[in-house]
Amino acid sequence: MDSTAARGQAPDPAREQALNLAREQALDAAEELFYGRGIQTVGMDDIRGASGVSLKRLYQLFPAKEQLVEAYLERRDIRWRQRLAEHVDRQREPERRVLAVFDWLGVWFAEPGFRGCAWINSYGELGATSPRVTAQVHAHKQAFKNYLGGLVTDAGLPAALTDQLYLLAEGAMVTAGITGSADPAGQAGAAARLLVVAQHRES
Image (tube, rainbow, N blue to C red):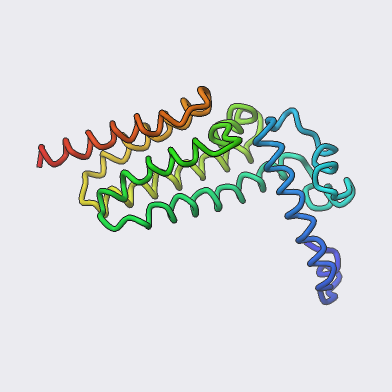
């Protein structure tokens, strides 16, 4: 809690604005450095240098590096899922919306600076030692799976197909991160199409 609020005083808008700006600057720097170089190789002093936010202010905003990592993943999750939904929403036909997920993965994988899935990478680095990071990873992956499941249901496809499509997408993310190629998205998408077509043959 802000110390001003704790003393029962009215918040200072200028101070709140400065804190919010510093927080965004810190998170922008953290996202670039953590995703580009890995979390464990980046220290708070690196964040200070890249963001222009003083160490004192950084630790005021994020008393521990783990909390900065948590905030970075939380903010990235919102942006990632919004971009995915925007791409899928361009499609009107329900089954096409399911397959559009894999089309979007291809767009994402082909972006300059793509280094795999930030949540898989973070879990690989800190999953064994950081409950905060593990919680963020689990929440992101569950949200993605739930979203995919909603698309499957809307298309009138069996709910069990969600697990299969989810594993295809996750496998594509891992493979693309390792190989640096966008091809796994197309390969996973082709497999997804076969699964969808197979459902029509069985129905």
